Amino acid sequence: MSPESALSPESAPSPENALSPESAPAELPGFVHVYSGKVRELYAPVDRSTGEATQDALLLVATDRMSAYDFILDSDIPDKGKVLTQLSLWWFDQLADIIPNHVISSQAPEVPDAVAGRAVLVRRLDMVPVECIGRAYLTGSGLAEYRETSSVCGVPLPAGLQDGSLLPAPIFTPTSKAPIGQHDQPMTYDEVAAQIGEPIASRVRDLTIAILRRGNEIAAERGILLADTKVEFGLDASRPDASGNPAIVLADEVLTPDSSRFWPAASWQPGRAQESYDKQFVRDWLTSPASGWDRSSGEAPPALPDHIVEATRSKYIEAFEALTGRTFA
Ligand code: PZK
Image (cartoon, rainbow, N blue to C red; front, side, top):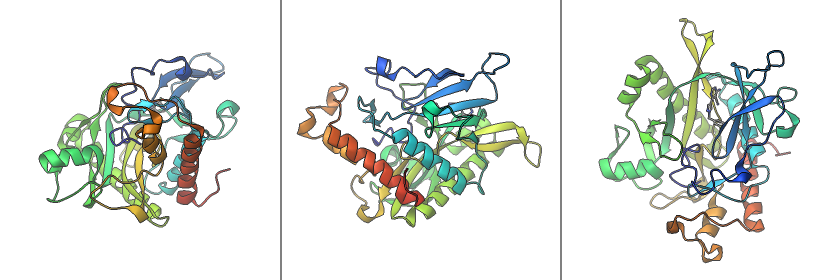
């Protein structure tokens, strides 16, 4: 994923193609479309008896769309939506002892056949209005901020860190949720606490770090580094915790290549841009003379040739299989 969009997959759609006909959401009988992200769609189930949208559930649908350099590409990556949905579901299970998640069902009959494998019916939560980002390695917007301030989101860091450096300990670097088309803004922990209150702020901070640590422990066994990740939390008032407060629930997708940076451990080398597990072929081709595309032109990139689409599809499947130890069916 492009360095600056990896952690904000729902932000900054290209104005050129955001409203193009091919990105119009599919009609799903029994559901009403409520929101389009860059690469995903959100629907609400229609209550059979009232004919109204239900208030307690949502259908999250992952498409095969791919973004690179802040553009949604014209070429879909076959099976990308399924691979990322199945990976996210696998991670929810790996994290279940750390935090409950929003999944109600990932199967029929709750999930319609038209989106089988790439959609999940989830509990509708009161979303925590902060992008919770954890970083184990320094890169992207975190690196840019460090070079200007020696800190990231108010967290001071030692001198001498480079692109890709392992941080002394994982850090919480939250951002505000920007309106679509704009980039999310860094926040300090104190700003988060002022916005959502200290008890919830400290819990989402600690949970974000715990998820990042667990993700890295598991990825390390498979030769993969997890540089950083964005997670989203919601509050479930229908599930009070021991103190009677709404439970904090893990929402959205988790630890996928669209929400996280995965690096092959074997080629990790601080001091340069790291190889991206999923997008390297796309980036290399788009920035090569073969594409005829000038990144600085502001124009939308061209469609990808079939061999780049196929190589990219293979990388997503390879990441799924390496991390989960399962075969992608
Ligand atoms: C929610 N998004 C982002 C995801 C999109 C956009 N469990 C929940 N309850 C209430 N709201 C959300 C969730 C979740 N997850 C998630 N926006 C709202 C998003 C997928 C597709 F278009």
